[in-house]
Length: 282
Image (cartoon, rainbow, N blue to C red; front, side):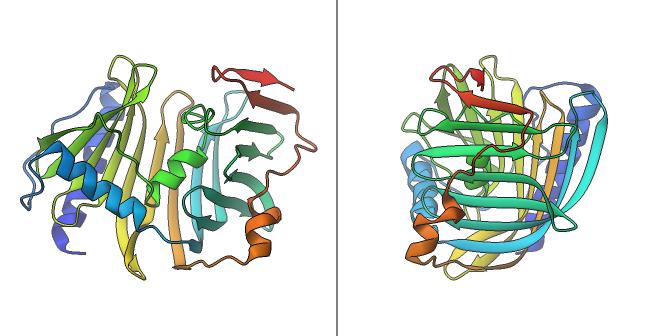
């Protein structure tokens, strides 16, 4: 990608550092950035985002993940994990993080369910819920399968989306229910998302996803670097995808264990999401 993309994302990380230092959770206004014209209407911006989602392809990748989080006793943990990712649009995800061949974290979705599991003894937690009702319920857990699917190309702008200009970027804002909203910051030159903000009812930022180092896979651009920050649980994730390729699953993979919710065996804490996004202990 051209140099102004690197400049744009670097400025984002500077703003994010200021965000942490100041403790403020409101939107930050950027310095001027190099820019292409972008779009002028809400409808054109929504159409461009939707075309990218509609053109999404199956993906498989390896890579590394830096995971920083606080365990249930309040102790800061930092883990470097090897990862495996399989995705088949629109809604099938398998994601696993290992340390020395031992599984630490797994995320997944299929048409009917989604799940998140953490195996370290300090957390030992398993969350799951039915779809579509639970899709937004896990937005602010340590990792969210729905947010990860969005990050790799499945941003779905609502019909109420509004377009505004922000420095050298287009910004599309839309509702995600219950008075909450989402902002997508888009590079006007390629119309790829560079930042996704998840906002609460007051407009304060609850979580952020940063996207960089887009790579062309077949005819689809995929970010090889993904940063995810969730503020309530003070969780920071940095994903670096490698060996990204098109994924064409077999029938057995589509219907087998790869995209099937695993049983919650051996977990201390098991939670099912109800229709009000409340966690019912199992």
